[in-house]
Amino acid sequence: MPVHRSGTIRPGRCTKRLPTVGILLAALSLLFTLPAQAADTPARGSAHMGMGVAAHDGQGGTPSTGDATQTEGVDVSSHQGNVAWSTLWSSGVKWAYSKATEGTYYTNPYFAQQYNGSYDVGMIRGAYHFATPDTTTGATQANYFVDHGGGWSRDGRTLPGALDIEWNPYGAACYGKTQSAMVTWIRDFLNQYKARTGRDAVIYTATTWWTQCTGNSSAFAATNPLWIARYATDPGTLPAGWGFYTMWQYTSSGPTVGDHNKFNGALDRVVALANG
Image (cartoon, rainbow, N blue to C red; front, top):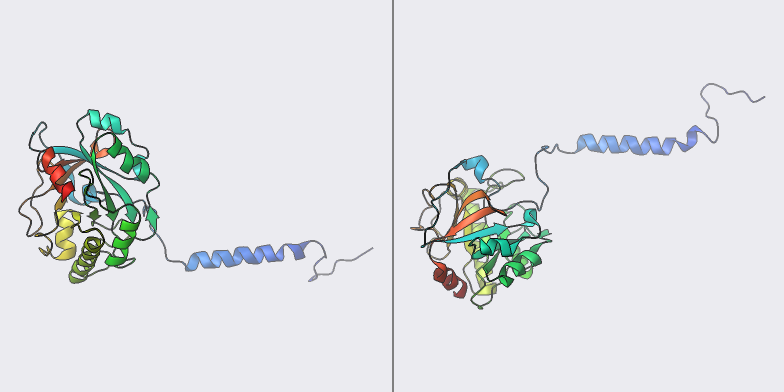
């Protein structure tokens, strides 16, 4: 009768388990050496216009309705999925922006339905890029944007691309950049976008973020239309240099898609911006 001696291993039993145990121990060791990530940090690619507005600036009321000198619009991203464009058109929405890209690592899987769908019901449409200045250069992201839906055509129905530059949902608010470095990054993006399309991109931002992260720069006010984000009864104080806003995102809880906007002018002014 075989005798099992202390300190030996019976063939065919524990020897097959040792590699598995070793792998598990190695995995646990790696897990504890990785930097901790906040549980509420969203996944890369999930950012969208106004993601940090309510949290940083709060929200308090909505503007009065029925102003004939303003034109209703919406902005959408993958969060809205396939959008009911005919419903929005019937409610008075005449223009729309759809998220095309983020950084150089993400394209919106619903972009075709959103960008073309808004156009098909009669809206004037545009595309936007969510900036991540901590990942790649401004020029690199501008090229990625143009190459993945952010271009422009003189058809009277396509708005210039928009740069969504706001709080970093994945880390430090200013993406680890100094104010001067942020202004340089934005300039590089805008210059490359214009070189590729011939148009000055729209800048979407909030005054508080712009003040904090660019030092309230006025460098782009003479060339780039301002799309201001503020969930209140009025757009409030604008960033330095801009005497007026072109667009105003006034709520994230509007009908059908959430994000609703006012264009500062009647429909013919929206067409004028599209035509360049």
